[in-house]
Image 1 (cartoon, rainbow, N blue to C red):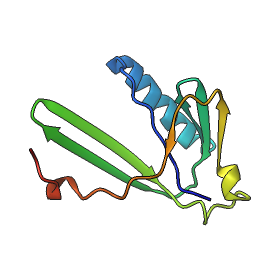
Image 2: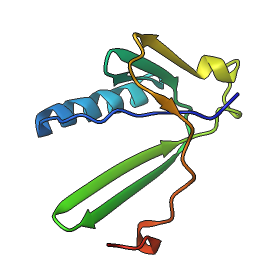
Image 3: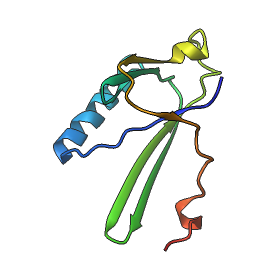
Image 4: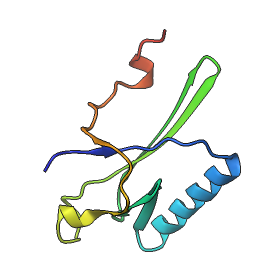
Length: 112
């Protein structure tokens, strides 16, 4: 099974972004099943009780990037198998692409 990455970028109001994060937080604290909307598709994931969280802030000129990354292993999950860990529902408009290599920390990246 290949590693994949599904990504979607869209413009939101601050209020819409807050609603999306609040829905994600509610799902995480509820039963650990989260649904991530990706346009016309929805990705449903099971998130285990223990995971890693990374917060990164990057300022580049007049642009600020805030990333919140949640990471966990599906190998340690009590749920049956890896294919059951993520299900895409709906018309898949997004392009799956191979995962990028892990980027260097922001402090090690060269600025232009």
